Length: 205
Image 1 (cartoon, rainbow, N blue to C red):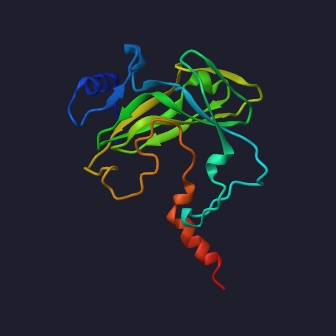
Image 2 (tube, rainbow, N blue to C red):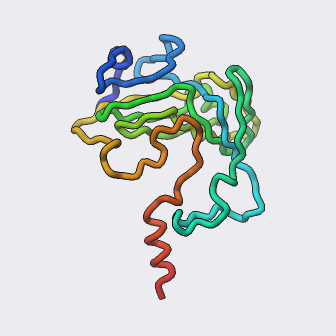
Image 3 (cartoon, rainbow, N blue to C red):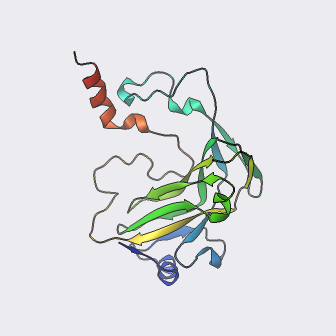
């Protein structure tokens, strides 16, 4: 696996071939760094909220109760340039302004930019080969002070790795729970097949 450089990233972004990286919109050329591309904070947010329920219950979707994971989040939206306050120890789900489409031989790591990490903001996720959509951002404030985030600001960066082989995430047959999303999406952990198996084991005398 090899990290792509600025020259390789620029060439791929300007190429229209199927095996190239698609990223839109790219608002300025210097979003492409030496070994990464800066990505912008999007408009939509899912804010985690306290409820009367003592915990988020993870049961397989076939056994899911009336109260779903979505009920633990509140939706809100901001316009470009508006501010969103991320409070200490708060989880907020968002997505990037940019739509990303990866070829089948490119893997991507998403990390918070150093300037935001120094404010206590955490972002860490990865995109499998063949993935497409607006990049999901799981924002968390690890600090003790609220931080104002501005919609459209470059909050994270993507690092692209070229991998060997012809494996493709799109046709692998595995469940693609977040594939193609353009807005933040809550956890779909209840779709994990292991939960059904574990439930049966727990209920076995």
